[in-house]
Image (cartoon, rainbow, N blue to C red):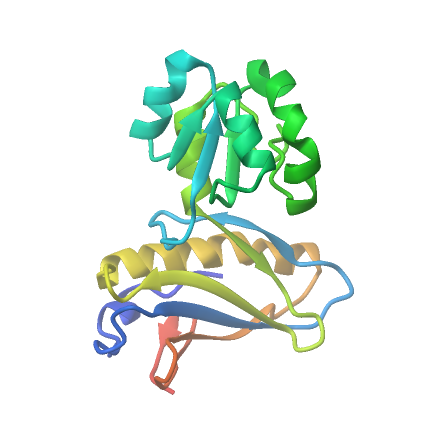
Length: 209
């Protein structure tokens, strides 16, 4: 299934909701299987993500230049435990894990303990930071058969940026239809912002609802 393309470029997106999110709402057939994951969007949609990086001294500057909000080593552990640092992403290197495990009781329950599986425990700190600010989780509401994914910001996105993100969402979500053996997986899709009428489109042709 292809994503909408040229149709988005002429869509009448509202201009007055400058600080609000655009959302992609995708109605998906109900399934007993979980449809969930993470989408690495080409254009970051998150302004509220704060990244903490625990690294050796020689990588602190690299982490900060790559977009980390807080970077340091063992000197940050007590502040982490005391809840003095504001962050919602935590990245570290394998070499620093013996230091970071001292804060495991604080990070673990918040789901912030770095792991190899989620890409937050790595030697490529710059790539991990870029991933942290670009990743958007998605999960189907099984009861309603609906999924919401943040795809843009009116304050800073042009239509080309929005289109790239929408196409990426379809690229990631569409394969679930084949794995679940559904003939028609995505029933309909809408772009919307709060207090505005949604723009409906049915890939690959979009039209105003």
